[in-house]
Length: 391
Image (cartoon, rainbow, N blue to C red; front, side):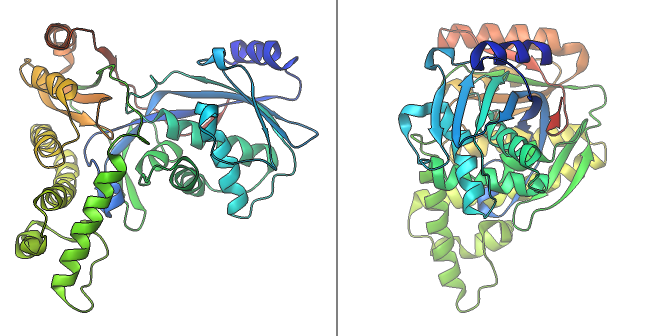
């Protein structure tokens, strides 16, 4: 792959002198959805598929970006003096946003760069192609300019770019899972304080199977930001009901009993359902990781199933395509658990499937999905990868 990328770079930018090649993974979240911006726990892992980049410093302040995946857009150019969100640049907003965010955080980049990108994550699949590109860009610039930024801070800079440059109020999970990934491990992350531990993915011979609906969606124009606002409104009413010094900062600070005690303070029925999901999903995630540590894969799968039901009924982020995939998955033999993963509104479902049943699972789910939806889903048997690297 590296040699192919270098040839592409030379064909695009004239030569490949003084270049370096890099990789950052995608991620899949096993459980803990829409909890990261609610101060709760998540349980993602990095993937072996991801985003490759080749880059070099320039002698001026020009920034030039090229995507092999979107070759029809050609080279997208800007300068360090002209960075601003600009919809016609499309995908290049993500690396531009990271450059902008670095400057906002006080990191000085005095020269431009040429950067070629090649992604192996399906765009819009919910496997964090955008966060992968953000982390990759931060990792590249940190390496080229010797900025001395930790991988955890690269994740935070990526999130800052997405929040304030791209305009999506995402939490930290995607960027953190990508920047801090560890091969054959998932990350049990408390998004309230960024404390985390690596958990070995001992699935007793089972496999992680990702199914892509192939329904495209963009987070900026989806209802992602709306869900976050609904949770914030519910939280504000709960805190008001608790009186002075409520002692909580996020819905993730509540357990199910706390929620039952204070839920009547939420005056809007929709906000109540959103908050219910955030609280219960956080507790489900804590129990799921405990089950995995106890080698209770069956309970882990049950909690995955419950997560999807909550995302469907209380958070309303699944939709026909994801529900069709998950219902078909639940109907297959050898399935331990299945749920939507990522922001929803399309994208992917993730299943844990007994190793001997994987082929039959893919065939059965694929047939049912295409019959119901009218077009095919794509399937990937996930390999759990590590974090960003220099190739």
